[in-house]
Image 1 (cartoon, rainbow, N blue to C red):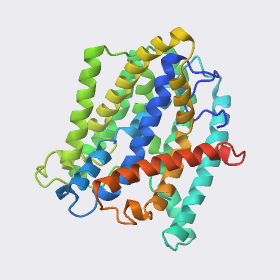
Image 2: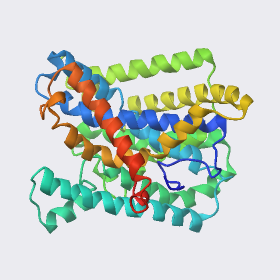
Image 3: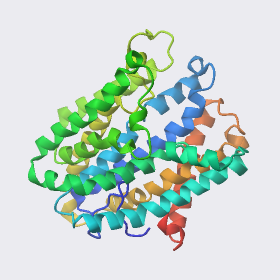
Image 4: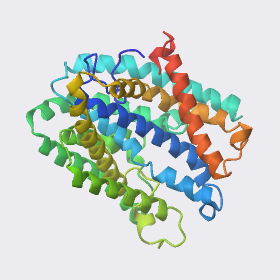
Length: 371
């Protein structure tokens, strides 16, 4: 892979990441596995009667059990990119972001326009392309590119303030920045409409600004053994709640699912879960990093960096690979509502196959710029 830094490619400037930051790479790997689960298992979760079958309930658990992955990616970006010690000025920062992100945005949007036309057999005209582009919906999840682009643009504005305050202040402001978005979702039934003000290409970053700041603010926090255990329990409890409430006829329609929908990434449950996952990973990673530093290196950390560096490419390509894997007869042959082995096999096949393709593509000079 080329030595780039992006909002999802959060390696340090040095050739080898300090052992204390090796957890960042591994958390990115876990998070991209979560994203794959959301999009792969989600096809089974939305099938009619899914809650009445074992594989359907497992799909719902995999889907909503990984909702923290998207905000965690943004937190990891903030954890490194908002570091004043690494910042070299707005012009240099934006140049590096543009070189890395703009070719990828253009390339993958063109690829998925091709998927719509020739794989999904969806004819369209130029007006459709304009509409999809203006709404950030050329294809599922490509809106994430708009998030990272928007946060890149506001980073030079944030850096002088971040450098002038302590981490506790950054944490409080991060929570304050997340609050309006959560209120937008929670009050939707009372106002009508939806959170469209944060779901356009030029405003999508607003919904994740709080996560971006929290990543830097929470980076030095290390939980003890009891705190880590409590955080793990919190993650399990919150993800179970999200899975339980989604389209559950036994969940009172006037309470959780109406005001705090499980599908939204902007709810307090998802943000709290992301924060807890982040703290667990950083706490465990620091303890292991200190132990590994004694012998001057760590093979697991080097492997994590290699896999973590590929996550932007995996994010962009896994939706294309998913279309292919769905045709494999051994994994259901196009029927997403099949059994548990097929469901788990599809998730594993999409993740492993996409990683293999991206790692190979990273050795090709032209493709290296977009994966």
